[in-house]
Image (cartoon, rainbow, N blue to C red; front, side, top):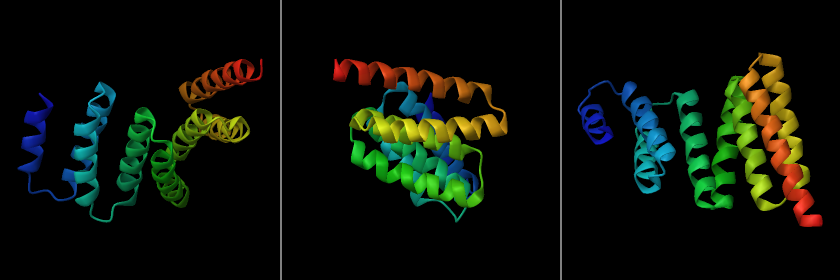
Length: 154
């Protein structure tokens, strides 16, 4: 189904819409665990971007999540830093979600102090903007952090 959508997207002449649609399709592939197709689609979306920074940051965030899922933490950190830089410059609320992803990367690296720092930053932003689901996600990740820390130090 997404292959058909992908072909339809590539046939479009709307150069501003194509990267957005490719990014969405790449994100769906990521959720499905189809990492190679996700990577290929997200990289194509990145190569077709037309200077629209918010969309570029979303693609970087998805690439970071992709590499986090694959356990390639340095690559994940590289992309999340790019996403956060753009989101922060745009003062976009998605910055909170990107910072939560950065906390997940730090957690996987075993840097619990940095993970907690970014969990709290994300929670503050989610609270400020009023996104209860985001607040809940920070609390779940904090619980995971406590569990990992406890297991590691026991």
